[in-house]
Length: 141
Image (cartoon, rainbow, N blue to C red; front, side, top):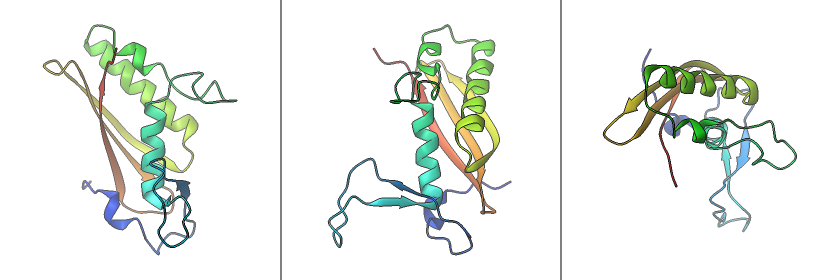
């Protein structure tokens, strides 16, 4: 399995269905003067990042969406907590992101940085290449 960054293939013509989301940076489209949209693989990658960073009760009218990852970061770093964080991310993506099929979640504790390095690989529906999203989870006060 090769590692592949999806930003280069964002405008793929092979997809029979293109996924679109609003760009949460609220950058303005110069031609239409409207908010820019992100499309296809980049939209799914952004959604996965947002799911990881969302706690329960943060999304209006959907308190069930989210996870308890921020609270887990205050626990002692151990192999059990590492496994629990990986499983929490797997459940989160499998339950709330229907546009992708999860391949693997790899979390590694970074003791010197006091956090977890997380690598999530998944396949976006209608695409052949695996997509990898990397993130660093650290506790913030």
